[in-house]
Length: 246
Image (cartoon, rainbow, N blue to C red; front, side, top):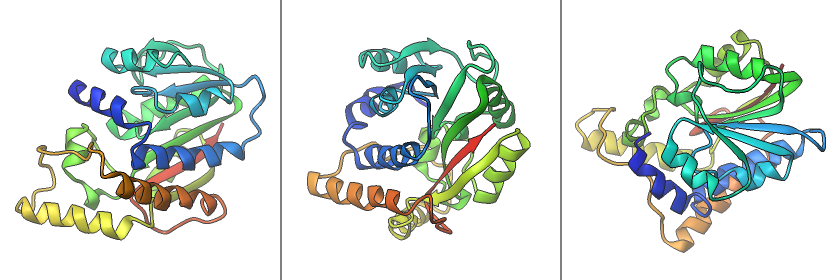
């Protein structure tokens, strides 16, 4: 990701509907886990630390990112032990150390997705969990993906195969952000049409705060999905979420 985007993310991620809505869904999934009270948790690709309050309540939190600017923002929260590193070759932790690893919209940035997931698996204790989110469906590729240096978007069958090939057992895997899917898909396709059919322009991103009432409405629409995700597997959505164990 461009380092210039981190100040914008730090300013937005506590209140922007996308970040806060995703957190509410992840939190609901985590609430169903029987983590030990002294759980050791690792967030990979932590960015500016928006997930720290949610994760630090559940145990001792470690976090890693490759970008020093992101780590500076994350350190200001004072909620995690931070290290600089990258997947798959620079994970400075012993094998079998963590009860939970969290990767929210990280895997799509990594060149070696299989090697990275294999290393994450080795960092988990027997029975340890991985909570993972990624963007879905390659035909939704937009300028936002390009600006954020995404390498790919995933279909559910692709993500399932990838996790299983890397030694994970899947507990839950589903599309999410399905209520807003029609509107988001329409906007992405319209942007592509206006760009002359190109799907890889790098001119704009979505890191802007909408008006308060719009932001509140979008948050409510996204976050309410947490009540059905788990029992239900929506067949389509803008993103994917997976919970797996070793």
